[in-house]
Length: 411
Image (cartoon, rainbow, N blue to C red; front, side):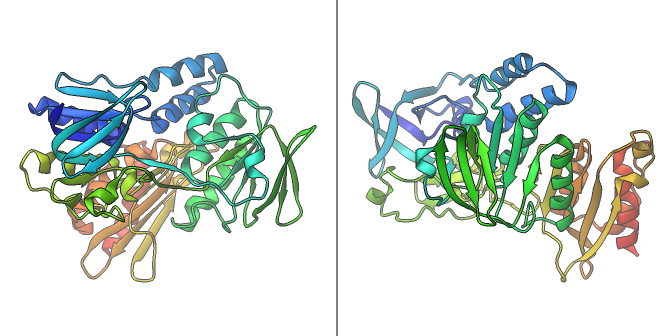
């Protein structure tokens, strides 16, 4: 069977591209061996987090999680090919299904196979019970003791969720602080948030040995600490899922996409398979528009990076550096915080003083991804700091903390 476009991978990026092409009248083959829509880690995690915030019982949280993970409905024009796709040559994809294999032709190919968890190099790890983040979000019960290896956003979120529902959770990272590539205050506040929930946070320490004992999983750390758990949750990063795709038949040894998300003529890539972890929506739009004849390039300057804990962490654009001017405020200085005792949070803005525009920003606080959206727009549109400082924000809101920081940068 021939298609206008074949999409390898039905996760977030692949399903969006397939649906958009079908709505524009293209014949699309969507190759996926699991559920269309992918693991839906962000959606299922958010459902559990919101249930935990409300104090819902675990049974109710699981029901909401499963509802959020329901596969999206594909429009007419998308043929879902159940199986594993492998490129057999230019314009040809072979799909190995549950019962047989079939070759399909296409004019364009989109690689959207996502990413897979990195397996930490720990002696004995393969012999003990572990979860990936996707598996941890599909469990019917709550483990009594959980050790999270790594500080990926999903690992931090799951650590808080399971701790809220009664697990004894320890998070272990070999980094000196959480979120080492973001503004220092974000990792410091995130660690405080997790500890407030009951999570034991151990930084600058590595797992040295894992063993299965009568008491459970024994994890020895590099500083001599012994931990006992029922499960280990792997949250130490992800890598693009490209193995076994047959890309070598196209002369592709490394999947590298240009600013139009094009790998080579007739071959495109989108989502975490490209190595851009937070660019799924942006790249989906870019690939879709280019396949529909519109010339569009990807803009990664202001893509939000979030940790959906309670409260959440948000960042966009550049992290602080000596080349940028920094201004910030704690949320405690706002009227809204005075009405909500115990709120943890801060906002920082990073400006290119020579050009008078924002280059980046970070925030921690209740609803931060919502009230920081204007800053993402300002970074992308390169709006003048002076103009942003003149905007009047509603009171009482946590967004009040943005205004004095902008005025300071404008001066």
